[in-house]
Length: 107
Image 1 (spheres, helix red, strand yellow):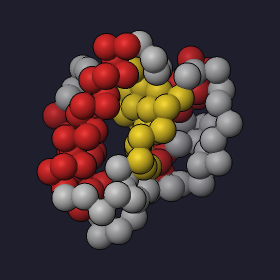
Image 2: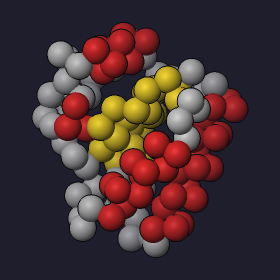
Image 3: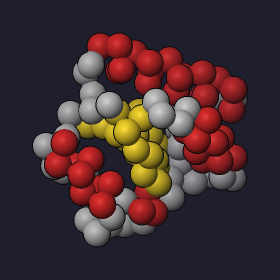
């Protein structure tokens, strides 16, 4: 159960995008409707990527793992374990070292 949350293509303010991130992650956790979440924050200036990753670090313990797109590879232990837990979903970004995405593995 991999959900995709695209907050990088909406031309929203940084604060609004982080608010959407928090709301959607909380909803997924409450509903139990996802095990893994692919957050698309885009390339752009890098400010949204930095904010998303800082937010993830601030939430330490809330997630089983946080995997940055550049680490999302079959040789990365947390990536392999997360993908197995989610049923090994088809994902074009696997192995592409895509800095425009961040993955969350929920408890």
